[in-house]
Length: 421
Image 1 (tube, one colour):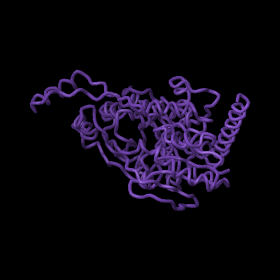
Image 2 (cartoon, one colour):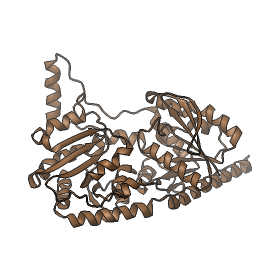
Image 3 (cartoon, helix red, strand yellow):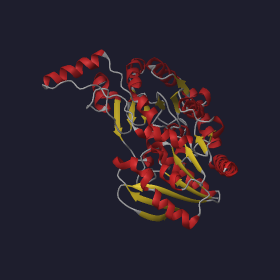
Image 4 (cartoon, one colour):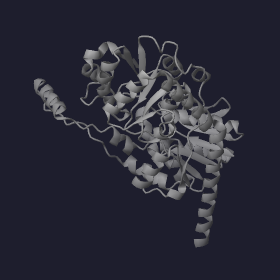
């Protein structure tokens, strides 16, 4: 099969998050299965085509701030290559409706939309609900600067969100990494259930992660480490974790809380989330460690020095950080909202907590800090689940079946249209 993957994100040039990881691993998985795969992506610094690890990658120069233009500007590059290759199918994410230009110019070419997390949901999850204290602090600060207080930022709406829904609805098949996201958008976007299929993202854990001991050798030492990996932003549950930290430290004073990831704005812009957390937790500052953003290659080293991972997101689709922690054999406290609950197998390979509940986070972490054998049990089960449920052989078969359904769906539609004509 000749497959085209269309995505603004693709490593190394635009390796910004989970989409780039998915496209990279999916492309290599499909090539390994014997298919021809080409990737159409962007770069902030270069334009052109080259072969990378047996995959033809076509890039257009487009800065991250111009991302919304990608769906139209990649079209001519794709059409030129399609004339030479004759792709059987192409796939792109719902975010930014990145296949819209191609779909308009090549309406007979079968198309799959892969759900990740639409912008409307991201905006909702990052919505700041200011308290009276936060409003008071902002107003006083503005008056001291002789300025009029600015309103707190609200979720913005733009036409791109309608485009995301429209081009998802018009796809021949819609795939979702987690059933949770599929169900949510079937309800919110009125997606046709018969065209929405759960196909988990492939995940190939590195040897460095799989070789880590389930319990690190210093687990019984005086200082234990609880690690959060992800962007420091509202929707990741970072503020809930901050509220849980004092409770945990009252029971276990010798604990370090490590925050790994880039910082976003706090509930009190323009202050950053890191600065905000440091101020809110200033009496516990010696127990906090902020690393900032790190490379993917650094994750095994960080997890090697970790005892417990905490991912208290308000909602997640398919968090790679959870899979990385599972592959490392770490005990995980994760959110029961969204796809993480499916990864952690209803609590069998980790402890699930309800979003917005700092008390539950504290209780779960304290429980694990008290029980080394439970940490080992959960870590071993998590590693086994990653290797059996998300391996490329299993996911490849599901993905190819999805493409075949999309091709058949397109053929049925075209046949029906001819009959009507």
